[in-house]
Amino acid sequence: MSWRSENAPEEVKDLLAGCTVDDPAAWRKLLAHVRSLALELGRWRYHLSREDADDLAQLAQLRVADRVKQLRDPAAFPAWLRRLIHSIAIDILRARRPCWSLDDLLSPSNPSIAEPAAEAAYSQVELRADLDRALDRLPDRYRLPIRLHLLEGLPQEEVGQILGRPRSTVASQIERGLRRMQQSLAAAAV
Image 1 (tube, rainbow, N blue to C red):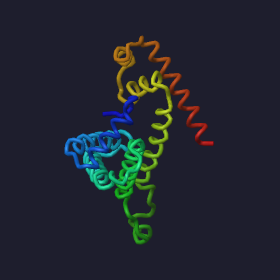
Image 2 (cartoon, rainbow, N blue to C red):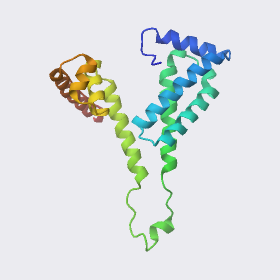
Image 3 (cartoon, rainbow, N blue to C red):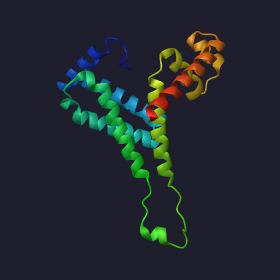
Image 4 (tube, one colour):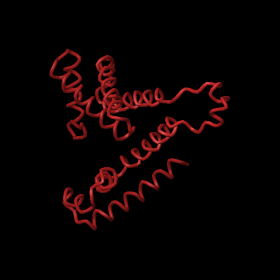
């Protein structure tokens, strides 16, 4: 379930209404969507291990089950869910960050401490989030070839077959889309 179609607001509204009256089928469908989205974002946006992505999905399901009845506007659910997943993912990344004490810093066996790997991972997550936002702003004709070729690693010929476009069209759409992303990121940095 993607909730990107034109009837998505009604579908979300009906599903949340079912959850409000504790309809088991509505809860199953909602929590399955939450799990699917959390796993996808955990693995691809936040670069979490399988175990951490699974933890993210479980925590997201628990928080949604606990808080969804407080949601006032069903149309806000998709954005609310993404913010909730983002918050949990950041908490998981922060928990991975090693703790350093002053004794560690002053220890002769450890004369210098480089930036911890978790800090680099956090920076990577921020960068990936910026790139994902720039990619999401692109029209589908650019976004889909970039996702399939650069993010999923499919050859341009195969991307062309999937999208029903010639390879040369796919190549030029990837190039134009990357140029637009570059302009978008430069504008956001200002």
